[in-house]
Length: 168
Image 1 (cartoon, one colour):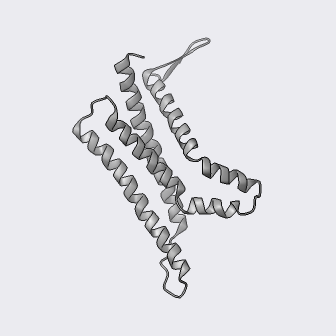
Image 2: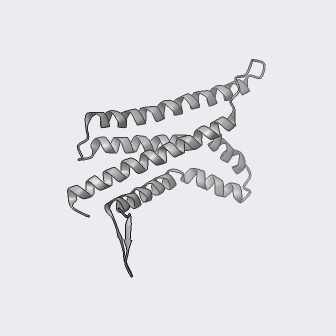
Image 3: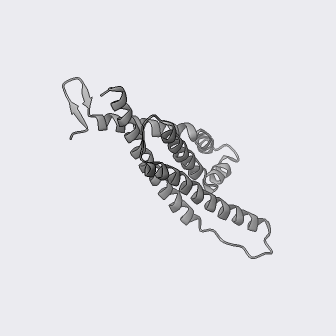
């Protein structure tokens, strides 16, 4: 089944293609609106505004991206709970488990980061060390998980919504 059919002056998307396009637009818009502070600090850093570089590094080191991904996953899971589409009981468990897993992982990493910063404040004690390269890898894995979860669930929700309202 093709995702879209191209005629001379029009593109006719299949239901999966329409749902994928809507889900992609929703995900990009949500990520952009949620990242306004990070984008602003990044722009200020490129303009060489004093202090912007350290603030940008703090945002990235403090797992701002992971927090944004947690917010997106939790919002989407909550939306699935409240929608008019009926899911099986295990689907609701999956939604809750996905949001809970995201929050749990973020809390563990936030705890490690704050322990590291607390240890830096007391140099005479032994320091636990955090490998920030591993934190970067964790963020990339978390972003991939968020993108896949969001696209899968949003495409499904949009397709079912279109069936209910007979849009396609």
